[in-house]
Length: 275
Figure 1 (cartoon, rainbow, N blue to C red):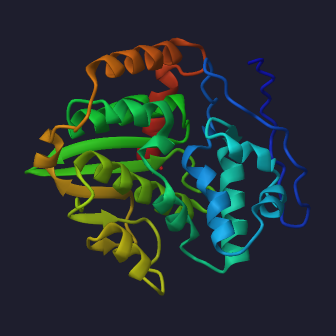
Figure 2: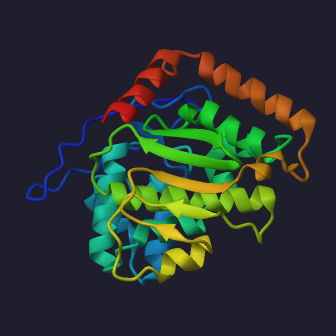
């Protein structure tokens, strides 16, 4: 596949709707630059809009994006464009938890190569550590972190651009797909001990309780899923060591290419901790 990738700036304002951006599709040998993401989970925006009886194409175009991008989870867009699109989706659907609905539709496979590696990891802990170590090949904005203390595990997701538009929607979607991924690894009946959400308490909390099946704490400083540390030792059913080796090699090649430097990831992590 010939790659003609360009990364234009948005130049978006409410009074001056942005022109449609050209298709930006990642090939198998490229990682997004800083501030860009592979669509991944966001491909579920279009079917979520359809669920509200809306044609997704005009909404996507209004955010300055080509609707055809959403046919491929490897398409690359600016993180700012995703925020703009989610803002429009909330306005058009009158649904303040639209991002949660998007993440609820997504699966571990929405996480691309890293999601496949998670599926073939030995344990749940190995799977989450693989996500922490390798997400930067697909998402140069989110910074995941796994910590344990006194028998409790905390998987958090910080954002390199915390003041981005629709940060609450993005956090909701990220938490929703994280719980879906953990259920695919631990079993469909798995539930966290609690979920921390960095947004104001909504008027209707029921959609959050229904999806997470756990206490939800709003107005938090971070987006995080809290669960017993013993779950990290669970074996991943169906994991294939040969597939794991192949995926690790592929991801290793991607991380070794220019544009996915370790120093960039260190700066991202430090910035999220200092802002």
